[in-house]
Image 1 (cartoon, rainbow, N blue to C red):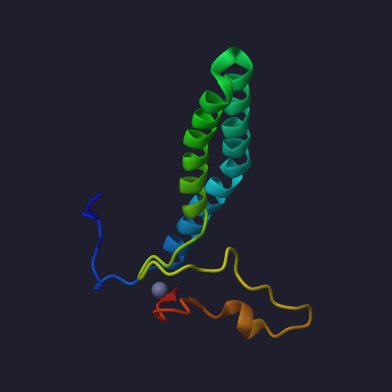
Image 2: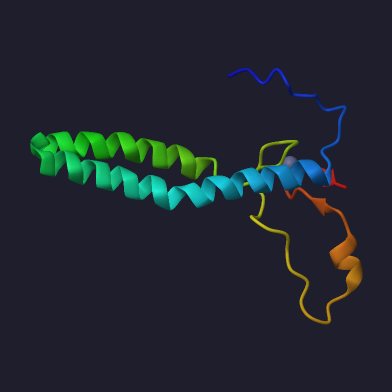
Length: 115
Ligand SMILES: [Zn+2]
């Protein structure tokens, strides 16, 4: 799919973009166990319904392809360069300094700042 909505390098990604990306990735992560269960369950049902081992495996394989796709979308990516980002913001240790918590997050790959 062409990325026609790509705003180009002129627009800096904001903290909102990052937030949205994390929410999207979290949604994919939540779906993962269900997708895996339905892939295996679908295969088991096909096998039990007389589809044989091959029929069951074929259905499970189709479901597992979807699981694989979901898995690749379950990591938040930098809105600027597409590099993988940590799933959540680093946590400031108790008693840690406040300036750390307030500084804008940056992408370790392209150094884009999200503020
Ligand atoms: Zn980046």
